[in-house]
Image 1: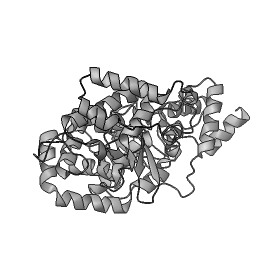
Image 2: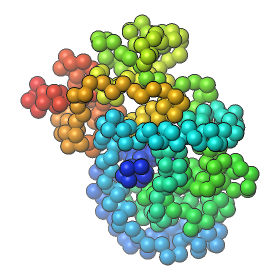
Image 3: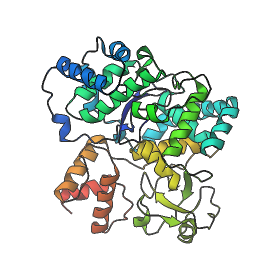
Image 4: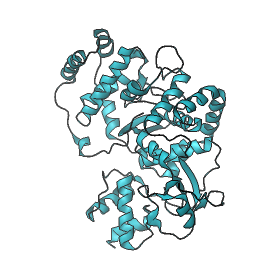
Length: 413
């Protein structure tokens, strides 16, 4: 789990797919020219130098011996770090795979089973049970899909690697401090390829700073202690800025015509203003007309699902910078909380493929727009560029690329 500038951890989902979640973690880190960098020097030499650094940083000799002895370089980890395309899927494709009915039911059962702990966590940190439970479901299927790799080996490999070595060096050192503190043993650290730990998949730095002993046994164990998992996740979300008693996302209906350029995460209006423009609750009833501000987000364009995203949705984006992952997590939380299934829009609503998105990004760059990385993912910069070109071409500026828009750009319209 990370304040997640880097979030690219491997997640397990019930269909057996591995979900690369960036976490925020690493997954949302763009794969740029850094991906083509070449490592120099021997891994064994690097590890010897890191061992010296750990010793001078105050890590005990016992932890250094237990954690670093016999570590080897894992080329498979680097291949996975270079290949992160899962988030190129559309919101509907992604949410269909992850925000499943089985996860909704499992989440409600856990809320009922651990009601006392969830109630305590909400009193202490202000985070409601459905929000915590949705992350618990997505990150590891409640502990059944935490990963099977040595976290220490993964972190050592990524810390040695040329692409983001300094970032992972910090994570690797934090993992040693977690061991030193007595929370976990080296053999306990089995997880994803990107080094996340526990059932809500915290990166080591955040495990060190935010994992808490919520069950009173003297250590923070996010692998086995339900109390520690719930309490630590709530504490971390509070740290990211969660506002107690406020909503996170709300499905809405939008009118057939409006100023679509206002549908943007960077633009916020009061609910009273959205209501004035014809936005209604998902049931069709009027919105509460008050001063609470929200952004209108259209993950599949003006014809697809529509949501008001409140300040607490920004917390989701700090957990994981992937817009698609964050909206899926927020939507799943509303479903666990009792919301009805979202309106999907027309059956012929099409999304660009991974390769089409890459081609779109290349065409936008040629026109002078900044899309970030050309990676086939419809991230914030790509959406902003789509919106700008839609305005220039006189199209509804809903920030969503369609096959028709791609064809216009191919023709040089």
